[in-house]
Image (cartoon, rainbow, N blue to C red; front, side, top):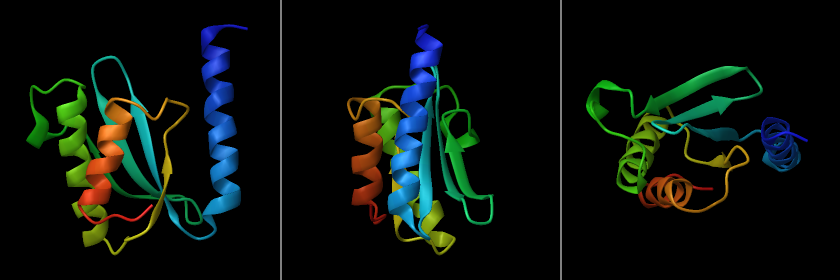
Length: 116
């Protein structure tokens, strides 16, 4: 199998496990490319994105994807989600290892008040 097919299988396996656990909670979804990190809080029951932030946003101009920018992203997405009334989410790491940028983002979001 190709790398792309394997990554899609990992993502789908993670998403399937989350759907059985989540219930009515929103999902904190992470996508990471080589240059940028994208984070969304998604309400899957309504199919609506409640909050989104990435390293391409205005407050992150000129920032690349690394652990320090992931910490800042976690803090900002947690504040945006709490402002929208979302206090508890399910963390969708999107098939990425819980290591480095992904771990820094999750720890920062927890520290800012988001529960998962």
